[in-house]
Image (cartoon, rainbow, N blue to C red):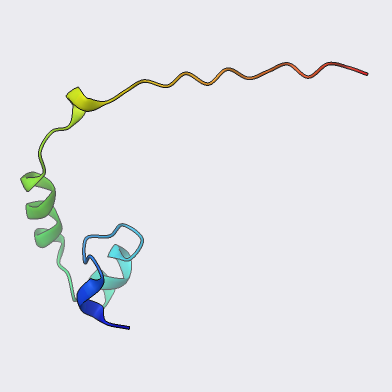
Length: 55
């Protein structure tokens, strides 16, 4: 697999990268601080549970 296509900040791989010392906690913190706040772009979705009818 070509490792250049893997995002080193992928949450699914982060623990492995930290353990292998391919990524430091400081790098993660710097990356998180660089992200833009997207909270104004959220859309609330309300999911209602349907009651099951007793048969």
